[in-house]
Length: 217
Image (tube, rainbow, N blue to C red; front, side):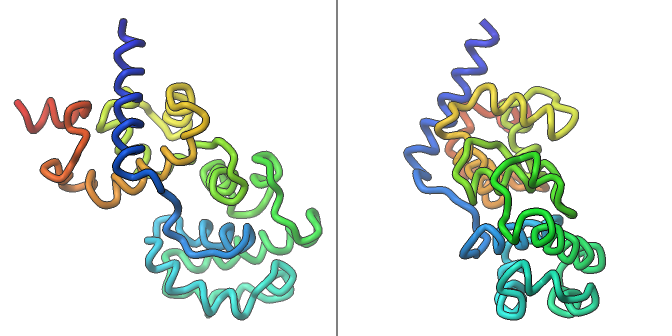
C-alpha cells in the first residue's frame, strides 16, 4: 500500500508539470557538448545567471577543447574570476580540456564512466551531460533536487544525493526522467526556495509533505 501511495505522488507530480511546464530545460546557455560541460563545471555553487554572464568571453577565447588545453590556469582564471571558486575551477577546466584532447580526440564522451574520468566531473555533472547534451534518461541530483525531493516527500529521509538519485530513477518513468530533473530544479529555484518556500504560489501542495506538516497544521 505504501508503495502504491508513493507512486501516486509521483504520478500526480508528473501530471502537474506536464500540464504546467511541458517544456523544461537547462537555463545555461551553450551551443555544443563542450560548452555545456564547461558551463556545468562553472555552475557548481554558482548561479546559472552568473555563469551565462561569464561564458561568452570565455568561449570566444577558447572555442574548442584544443584551444583551452593549450592555455594556462592563470589565463583561464582571468576569464572566470567572477565565478565562485575560480582557482579550483581554472585547474579543473584546464585538466578537463587536456584530458579531452589526450584521451578522447577532443570529443566529449557520451557515457557516464568516461565523463567521470575528466577532471572536475563528478556523477552529478556527468548525469547533466547525459540528460542535457545527449538526451539520455538520467537524474542529476544537485542541491535543489535533493532539497525539493525530500521536502515534497518524493524521497524519504535520503541521506545523500546518490540515495536520492536511485529513488527518483525508480519512480519516475524513464521517458520523463531528464525533464523531471529540470522540473525539480526550476521548482526549487523559483517556488520551493530553500529559506522560505512560496507555498502560496505552489500548484502541488496537495501532494507535498512539507505543506501538510508545516503550513496546513
